[in-house]
Amino acid sequence: MLSALKAGLFRSGPPRAQAAAYPTTRTPVDLMLFWSVVLLLSIGFVMVYSASIAMSEAEKMTGYRATYFMTRHGIYLLVGIVAAIITFQIPMATWQRAAPFLFMAGGLLLVLVLIPGIGREVNGSRRWINLGFMTMQPSELMKLLTVIYAADYTVRKAAFMDDFKKGFLPMFSVMVFMAALLLRQPDFGALVVITSIAMAILFLGGLNWRVFAALLVLLAGAFAVLIISSPYRLQRILGFMDPWADPFGKGYQLSHSLIAFGRGEWFGVGLGASVEKLFYLPEAHTDFLLAVIGEELGFVGIAVVIALFITFIYRTFMVGREAMMRERYFAALVAQGIGVWLSVQAFINMGVNMGLLPTKGLTLPFLSFGGTGILMNCAAVAILLRIDFENRASSSSSRKGVTRV
Image (cartoon, rainbow, N blue to C red; front, side, top):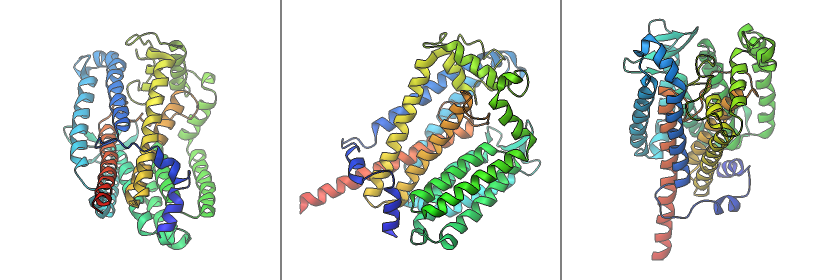
């Protein structure tokens, strides 16, 4: 069991090289990881305000207040910070014991959101549950719960990772059920992210590479069938390939996103000076926030955002690698699973904004406007910091033990 997990978690390189990169300072948590998140959240707060001013002033539902979306985003950030402080207090052993129950609760929410009167429908999609003070999106919650459950499952089934029937098939059956619920909403973007999380954790946990390769082929075929069988998804693919063929129809969002990047050039047109956010670019404060950043802050602004994400993801995997070095396998898989989740989602969002991937409704982690998304991002970071905290506490205890001897 231990050898299987070690082999999986060491796929990306030798342990000594990775361990050398781990910080040895006396700080309780990884400061590079912490400050990269703080800077991303701060940039997001400023840019959500900038991107939403025109919409806030024009819509009746906002009371014609320019600060409407900024105020709500600020409240979400405060709630997320409070949630993160509470989450940080929970030991990883508690998360591991609760993993199956949390995952079942998340599955129940995915069922409830499909029930008329409980789930809220917007633009033909039923993805939200109205809680009164905010709307909750269960698919965002399921991203974090999938990380925790898949990590627990992999640790429990480590001895069977080479066995298709005992190791892979049970997890695959659960994920097929979750996929069916997500497609009923429909939320194809969340399905891609959640599938990536589960597959990556199984692979890192030692899943047989032949099974993994065969599954990748099957998944590619399944996604192709889902796209071809849905005229809506197929139109998005065709629009992505040549947005200028129908710039006022299926290529509208992407064409205006590309115009925003083009206007920004190297240093941008200036903070607050975007033209595309003035009702030309749909979802400017959510899915296409990066395009507004590109227009107002230019290539330099985009480079800073990407550099912060790279720093965050790098430190995330180093925290996971350090946990593995201390034989804390569940914590290691959770840390690296969170890294996979946020890097895949950020990559897809950036690719969509830049015209490298088909248009998909996924927000940019830490930056885009959204209640449940920000809350789950903050909770995920708190879990990462908890893993890092326990790594450092373990290291400190080990040094004390050596001194006593």
